[in-house]
Image (tube, rainbow, N blue to C red; front, side, top):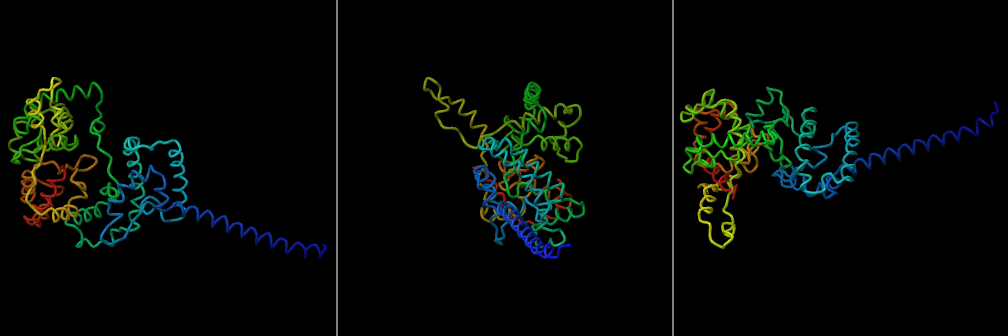
Length: 397
């Protein structure tokens, strides 16, 4: 072997190796720098699709602003912390670039139409990975239940025992929930839906004697407002009346298999859910006929369909704090109910009726979410309940 050739090649090989290492470091560093640059709130809202939609939800949420000052932004909730899962998520996100170029959600209307699909996709991912991103900050084993809201402590204790994960209950924490589509839930369309609505309107003639022609309930709180409530919730309550799981004497004659078979339940809940009651009268011009005369009858009929909850006496600020702490996780930030329709809205319901139901929960005459909740309701003072009702009474203004 030529020793001079060997000596000459050795430094060349060493320099080449060093160059390769240096190139690898540059490429690796560049890749990681680029990945981290796209893993910030600023990058996530750099397109108007995100800035004008989900970001507006987020900036009013507890993840953006809270007493502790700790903020969780887009990557904290939507991107894994571990390096390899993070890379996989970034590769998956390349599809979002395509939809940005295609203009899939470049208007508010397009985004609203896609929101249910997008939300369900995220919920499914979080369900499958045991809410991994939530658990980066929130862990069952480090929770001090004694410091939590009363219902939250009970629900978390039950969740631990039942093996639940965060997203089972905490949908809509950072973003507005999609509007529940009651027709989609029921699965009826076209002629089948129209037939159910027509039949439901006939059945409602019996219900109207107590609940009102427009299912608006009574101001004295004797009968609840039913109009616009979700199909799943209305159906669930009627079945509870039939089985006597919820015993209500006035409902007994009307909720048996002869008077209310299953087909009738489906028809009446379809119809009542479809009634949308306005919260204020329209402008006077809209009740004026073509000849300029005032339509007094039309104005009267319109006024009967108005749902206007009177301001309940109580402290609004205290009620807002108590409601947001104790009730909002399930019933919605403004009392709008749950997305899936299984938890009823409180906003727009007659205050006296709500107070009577709370008393029923306290006495165990009606079961709330769990039998043990009766003891929790007893922990609320009367003035605290009044404050919460005052806050709810102004939410549909």
